[in-house]
Length: 423
Image 1 (tube, rainbow, N blue to C red):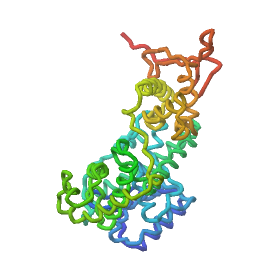
Image 2: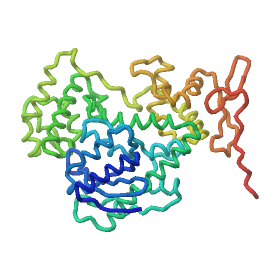
Image 3: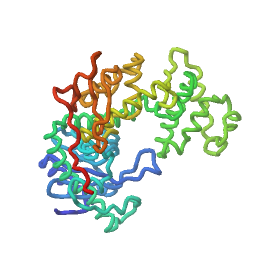
Image 4: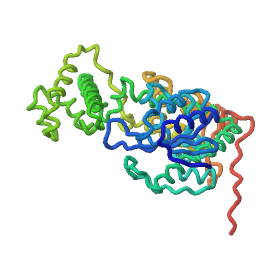
């Protein structure tokens, strides 16, 4: 495999043409995120089936040919842990990547370990050992060292062979459609990060009333615009905890503003007029324009909901072990709680639970809803199995039949055939 560092625009554009001819490319980036509003792109790593290259964005100034490839439905772009790679596309084009795959997500549908780091994934799928020694490198410095170049190339050159094995296996298991749904969800989540509701990710919002939420929202967007203008990380403009405290206190003047602990710093005093203006605007909003209170976090829910969520967690863990799928991809604690609120308590405010939609409904939706309805009992079938439980449908007369992996079966689920240990 030919490997090279590209610093010339014409070389880069010629390689982009070869990517279109190949119809598939592995993609990775090296970036620094500690000092700027958006992560600073320091290196692109690209690999076709027969060549891997590094592209220096400090020398190759026009990366438009690459971003156009990410928007091309005829080219498959494959990454590992590709959220940041998708973000770069959205940042530079205003659009989401079109035919985007992620081998880290794909592996979660072939085994229960998720997320797997790149080195572990290479070893698991290809049986190779990679050497990640430059994870803390300053990728802004030039020239790049030989060690950095080797690391960056290795970070991309295994992606396509991994995807080839994964996709073939997932096709045999009829799970490719499931994986594609998760790729779509990854890209959709990246796009929504820039939407009007991004402020709802602030920690501690559930403790604020509607007026305080309006203040938090206004100060959040002031912070975002200020961070962009100054090209600094948003939390360096104003910490999250201070933002929430301002929403609670709602200072009316600079003296009240700096009376908040840690708000008496010089940079905050300089921005006092703008912060106070954002607060005043929120305080002037009519009641019918105030934001709705977000859902409470898991720890604030009822004991019954917690208990039922834990019961569903046992059922889901067993189902995922049986199917060899990562439980953290199928559903988290919040998803189980949402299902309990929706199915048991009739709380429809937040829509149909994810566990009852798409491929997740196929994997576990009927099982979990039947558990909640008391139509299924659980018992231990084989304590030594990695999925030791059996789910049995019940009627008034007793057990009717056992379940299979995807729903009721005409014959019982057989326990693991693990051989007994020799004495």
